[in-house]
Image (tube, rainbow, N blue to C red; front, side, top):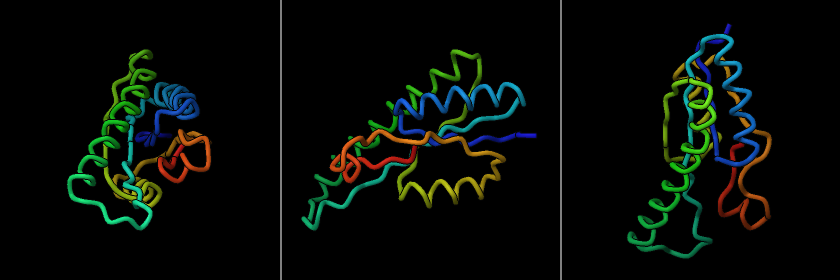
Length: 129
């Protein structure tokens, strides 16, 4: 039924819980799983940022993405499942939808809430889970 599953993750509690469900489905159907973290570079509220500042922000956000992928990967490795991983830059929702269509995933498993808990965090960090 399912051969390819896409699991976007922001490393939040909800994403980790969704990863458990995803791992169970993958195991049941012997499906391949790809974990995806999309790094969104937030606008700096109208303040022009230097190239160094932009690079530093990209580096920090990419590091956060790798930590989210690491945390999510553990769920699959604890169940003896191998996965593919993708760390990408862009606008999360369009990227996820385009990537899913382009790679012809059968199922997308995503948490219901994400890492940003407050209004400010939601603006600065955002969420796809």
